[in-house]
Image (cartoon, rainbow, N blue to C red):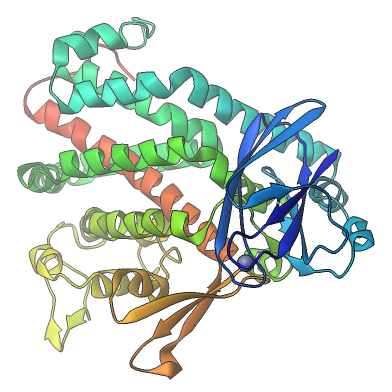
Length: 431
Ligand SMILES: [Zn+2]
């Protein structure tokens, strides 16, 4: 079902017709650009079947008009056709709805799976969001007695709270719940992977493993990263409705390069994705040190010894200390080349051109092509270095980085657990 809205641009008065698809969501953001002056227009749609209500915060809702300028399908669940120019009101009903398009591509069964998956995420957010935030705040405030009280809802046979190790384990369970909801398959796979790896290290090179653990613990990096990941998760949970069509991407029968050619995303703007993209990139590149250390331990039996051939400005980088000391994130990322096992957790998730565009002042970001949702990152010094990406691809890449961070958070957890054993604290339950 559709509801049609006519939106007048507050700058140039051009009219965009929105065909808002009612689906299974109670609400979702609406984001698009004026096809003429390119400014971003913001609103939010609410659904109370059969009613659809649109509130516009930038852009004016006007009565039906016979000579609209642009047409856009809007869905909070699926990818949509791109913004297109029209000449008359009769042109409005000319294309397949995002829902029908998804069904014809992926089928009813996939749709039902996707719908249940998203509703599960929303259910988690509604019921567990405050619990997640409070547990984390208490943990980082070191309010351990209050945290214990808060965690006491967990079954005590599985999650007893008798010592620091138990409390950390229960706290981690709370943190994993959201990730398991959004990505159960990958969450289980990474947990199994790192659990098996640590077991191998314990059997074959326990002293090397303990040195690695103490190195990161002494530098306070594990706590710092956990705090940063909490902050990031919090932002993702708050903005969840903006990302739903990104989560839908993997259920289309195409890769992202094909999807971006035909579809747009109309629930998030570049301005909104930009700070999240940057934050994911920075956090992910910071935590690479931990992956490097595990690679070093696995392949060279010593977490400090880097693989051969790494150079920074012609100087050989042979130790983890030297690697961490170099500030260039580009260099740190280039050391991940897919040749060692821990590389695979992040390999292929970085787009340096976009990060540099977002992070450096010598770039000017212009929304150049609003019909294709293509963002041009213009190098002010050298036109040949200009880069362009679709909003959809930027969102998709950000999501890939976000998932990689969740995987690393599991490695951080398995590493940190060992610090308790080193202090003589053991879990009350065997697992
Ligand atoms: Zn305009």
